[in-house]
Image 1 (cartoon, each protein chain N blue to C red):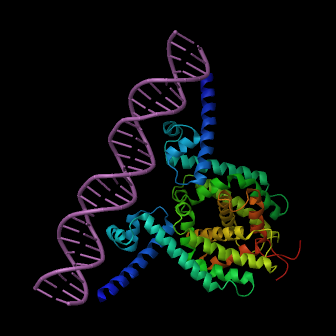
Image 2 (cartoon, each protein chain N blue to C red):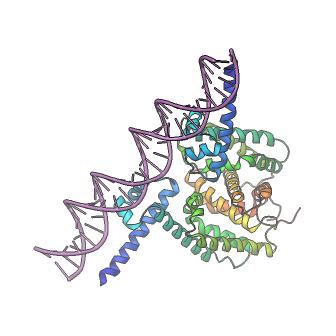
Image 3 (cartoon, rainbow over the protein chains, first blue to last red):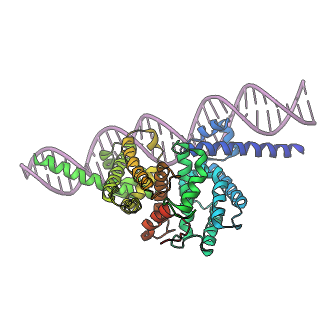
Length: 193
Length: 193
DNA sequence: ACCACATGAGACAACATTGTCTCACTGCGG
DNA sequence: CCGCAGTGAGACAATGTTGTCTCATGTGGT
């Protein structure tokens, strides 16, 4: 009886560890094979297959993980509180840990065709777009850039940032500042502040 | 005797057509097979192989094409003339046709390991970074965002833009404006102008 | 008409990856 | 001590892609 609980628990722990190892590896090498993923997680390919029926299932699970982390980040950023530009800064800071995985899934075209987690992504898109819309309504953000584009741009900058950091082109500690400030303020120097 | 000229000419024309077809296809479906690439170009796989020894050679040729187009865009943008922010706007406008191909190559990790065209990319990076550096030196651009990051961000936004347009999320005619204005001015509404 | 050459179609083996299977080993609880 | 569940290692076939080959066809120049 208890064994079921222990079993379920151990599986969950291992599964999560495998998932995070896979995320870390695929972030760096998006074409890694199941064998490489297994080795990166310190398990055999057979065990990897026992946890995830196949590569599709693995990517699907990574999508679910990424969606969950993004939702957590969205909650932690409290997008409805205070000025929208501060909300965006909080969002970038909170979502940073998921940026690498996000970049991987962003380029995984399978993401678009298979509508497995499509609802989850749409939900996140909507929440992100909402903060931009709120900023526009409050007169904080310019209205010639659509919320949809700002959302898309945020993803692109997160991916670029994660990639640039992993390549050593920019310092990891500057990640949040670089992305948030560019997205909000742009490259042009401004008079005020 | 003349046949050699005609031969060379025909080869060049066909090769260019194949290359552009491949670019258009791989922009949409980065995992397309050689067979799909051949069909997209309206030729057989055998002929495709006669033009490009293999997939690696094809990607390498696409890199060369993209590099050439980027250099052309850089020339046409006259990055050394006038205010840096206008130069950036011209650059985005000129480089737009290459954005899709750029996005494909940007995610092709093979690009980083094989140092085939590395010098070409470095040269482009340097020219792009130079305009941001010039803008900083002239007091136009803020100095807390490094030229390297601004360059990286430009690539990311170009990729996001190309992808968003091809997915129908943003209108194609807004491409240049969306990217250039976000990169330069950011999302925050500004008092002046 | 003749010939050279590029092409398309298809066959073929080589290769990597995947998914499934078996078997032996280990650790842990009963 | 026994049994069981999970694991690692490896074998295996199936699959898809690639690279190479041959052969028949058509076309354009001589």
